[in-house]
Length: 87
Image 1 (tube, helix red, strand yellow):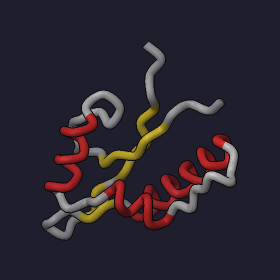
Image 2 (tube, one colour; image 1 turned 30 degrees about the vertical axis):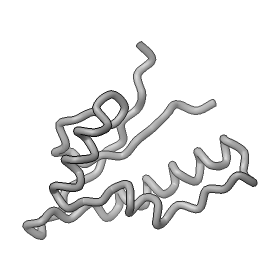
Image 3 (cartoon, helix red, strand yellow; image 1 turned 90 degrees about the vertical axis):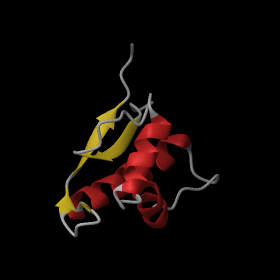
């Protein structure tokens, strides 16, 4: 199985794996709507295997990384991938 991956903006100080609520609130307060944007371009399905769903999400993350997010000031903020650490 592939490593768990999330997308975040470079300015978000919170870890989406361990500080989900803080991460999500920061994302919304900045006006990014990362989860909503990701969901709108990702076609997962119960009919797909876990690996196929993972690959679909990974492709969607790559698409968002190409465009970045736009903050409330109208500035583009880059996205980056964050991987779950195996601690």
